[in-house]
Amino acid sequence: MPEVRDAEIDGFYVAVGDKVRSARHEARLSQSMLARRIGFTRSSVANLEAGRQHITLHFFVLIAQALDVEAGELLPKDPFVDGYSLDEIGEHLADTPGTTQDFVRGAVAQLVADSDGKVQ
Image (cartoon, one colour):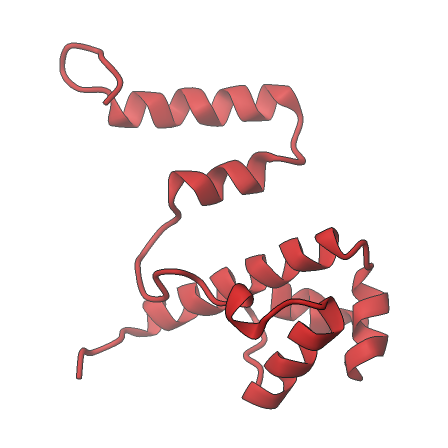
């Protein structure tokens, strides 16, 4: 069995929280509304979405039901891979100002540019 580090576990819960937040936004629910549906407090939902609160499996299923999604949709594709994919970064940028999006895209382009300055 592969060894999973604490940082990878923390990253997993952050990724799950991101998925819950995205699904909640898609469902047009506030944190308070979701909290009432599952018997949490609003601050517990905020902590869950930030990856600070680790939830039990039965609450995970309740959250999926409250958001009207399959539970598997709230799980990260690669649960123990450090960092974000470019697609996930794009999802996080969707609701940010254009200047922020331009800055992040420029920074990412610089990071992946080869020595000739071409974007890979």
